Image 1 (spheres, rainbow, N blue to C red):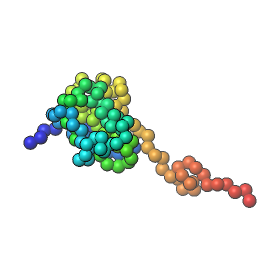
Image 2 (image 1 turned 120 degrees about the vertical axis):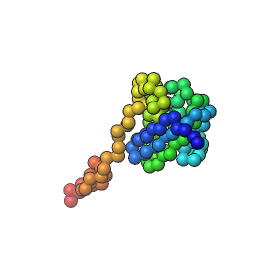
Image 3 (image 1 turned 120 degrees about the horizontal axis):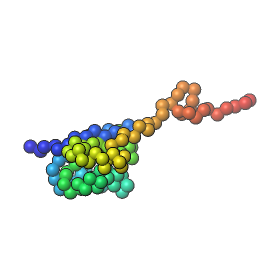
Image 4 (image 1 turned 45 degrees about the vertical axis):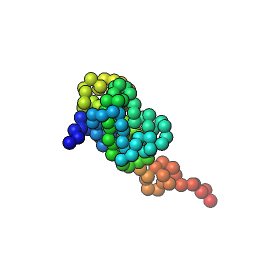
Length: 130
């Protein structure tokens, strides 16, 4: 039986990530695929790894992530948030370094809803004088 050392839920925009941290050699799996396969853009893969780099635990744990909703940037941010929360569960000493880098703060920015009488959230329809 595999034991999860830490579990974290990360959110950003409309993405939600469930992160499970286990003992291992540093393998990160996202939705059943390798990290670099799931996030082919290099900056997204680096973003997910950041909490492990800050806490110097890149090769100590295996990370299993289930993520859904939103686009690739939101999903990468949600994975980073969830991983940071899971690492705090494992060791409370990580909280200071992760908080100072902003990984424990949930990014509250969402897409503003479309209003009636408007073309978008704030954009108005074209005005015609005649």
